[in-house]
Length: 282
Image (tube, rainbow, N blue to C red):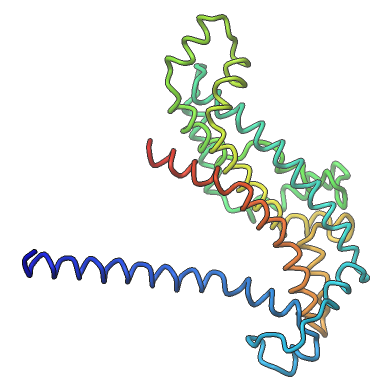
């Protein structure tokens, strides 16, 4: 090996090392808020006020979790409400998005492409713009401070989900669908037995995105149902008072709220990687 090859190899090694160092720094920066939340959750209010917020707990305590779970705010009820909201929204959004995406990808009807792009253009509208009209509609339907008031505006197909699924459905070979039609399969059979099973990685990723989005939703539940029923984000905000931030309680509630998402990510990790590989392959 000559000197030029050696220098190229060294530059490649240092370049790879620099990439890994940069990724490690970025990962630490992204994970630091979660580490801070975790450490603060196990501190007493006195220790949090007297010591550096960035220091490890001198005495690990569970009093913040006991206060959150048994306090004046029904945090357990908020967790149950959030779970129900997420389940209803995931089922509604994913199922309706699958139907809409298949129609836009495989069915032929007048104005299909125009309707699709008009529907997709709604992604450019900020969410804050539609809050007041949605609230007025729910108020006229007597759905304020109700479970259905939280879920009805968002339980149908979302533009992002329809776009993601449409592109995936269009990548399925047309020969498979034609062969199924020759065998006598109808549209519903093709969708449920061919298209959906072949799109499991994308559906798993879409499900995870929907769960995380709705689990962390704050603005709409706070506006439409501030007191009852409360979701976990609104209940966490309710732990604060005008004269006391109650940061140790807030961080304990935040830590509890993170646990289901971490478990869900671990469970869906293989499907997420498969969806990324599938998208890259296309």
